[in-house]
Amino acid sequence: MNLALFDFDGTLTTHETMPDFMRQATSPLRRALGIPVFAPMLAGYKLGLVKGTTIRNAVAIFGFRGVPAAHIHAAGERFAVEYIPNVLRTEAMQRLAWHQAQGDKVVLVSGGFDFYLAPWCRQHGLDLICSTLETRGNRLTGRYQGAQCVGEEKARRVRERYALAAYDQCYAYGDTHEDEAMLTLAQRKFYRGLEIA
Image 1 (tube, rainbow, N blue to C red):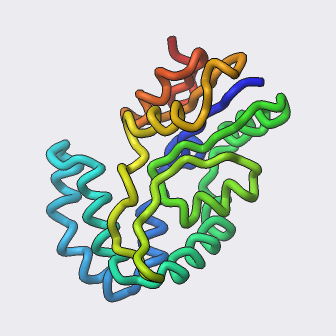
Image 2: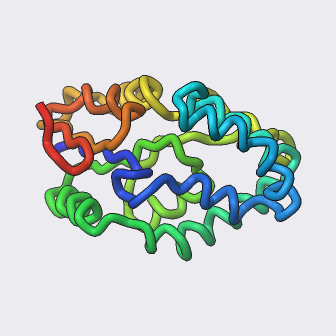
């Protein structure tokens, strides 16, 4: 049996989905207040001056602090059913289905949130490693529970959960520098749809 590791945003989808989820899951007031707050940070990100992890931390705190967790989980269930199917890459999903047809263990490894990735993975019979937010009582704190699942953290979590030597081969699929550490785990590496050495 092989192990197949898939990034989500930009690999299985046409673009990053977290901003779309934030727009759908947060209140209109928080969205309106967030535009001027995050405009300078987004400009810095586009110029390469602000890290993606920094912006995601700030957005999660601003958008979700104090919000009932059940509300965001319900939004994630809707997002998985109503939104995600419209942004999937056909060829990438065909490749994922090919692995499943071979009997491979297929794992989604993403910096995205479990709110929408967990229900989507259940629909498709996939294992999931992703980012989660902290909950206290029944409300979100807005803080990540542990590190964001990007960069070296992706590779660390894969190694922690799976004995790589137990698989005949490891395949990995990604599309940005945040996937590079995960790609190094694999004998067969695919970057933006093309196999690389």
